[in-house]
Length: 304
Image 1 (cartoon, rainbow, N blue to C red):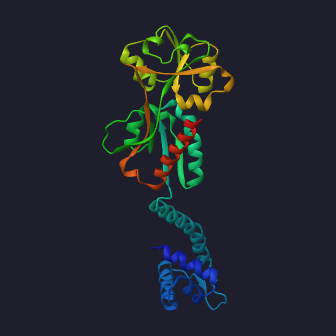
Image 2: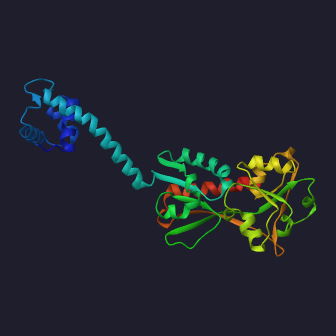
Image 3: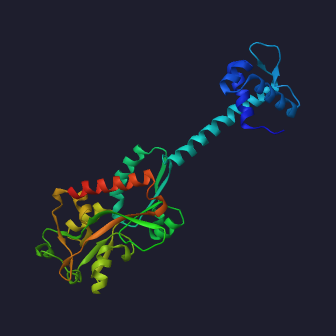
């Protein structure tokens, strides 16, 4: 027996209207065509689907069984069709994000909350476990966007600029370095540097200043939370380097800390944050909207 979706729609229409004429109108068929279709189903099944000569037309036990199948299957088919239509129209999809910038969680979460409200049909998630393998994961389509400050020349990957920021030194107001107008690599040599617990290749203070100048701090102290880093700095337990917008958005007025710009060869250090996507996805409406929201939130944070 070969049952098609049109057979299920037919049995459901007859049940809803109670007559062949009503079902034919509902389905946009002639009554003759509908009768022919029903005879074909009954011949395949070897059973009658209706109790003839009843008004309204009544389903036989076999017809009731087919109706139950129609009521279970057709809503699933309709939902699948709607999902595919949303995908084709750019209203639905997946947006899984990997973050190479450890401090960016606090900036990205409100962005994702706004995005969730605007695109309820898009599955959005942060994939922290892929932070150290983010670009390969993007190309393997395991994630759909990577927040990174290190653009690479990768085939099929587009780096969309988000905003510029300055990594700044954070010290207690009474620390000797607070008196300096700008900070150089050699100023770190006698200090305890408090950092996020990530590889130094992911830390601006190393990639942009200390490693090129071959300077090593006296000690390193890894700390997970930005707020705790600032509290330790304010307590005189060490110094830290954080993006300027992170300090503005996290520091409290009573912490008694100051920031100073980092310089290398007399020039201030400025970095740019990017949203890396697959080139083919960059113009998808919800991808473009997430990038736009990220830029808007960055402007808000930078204004403090």
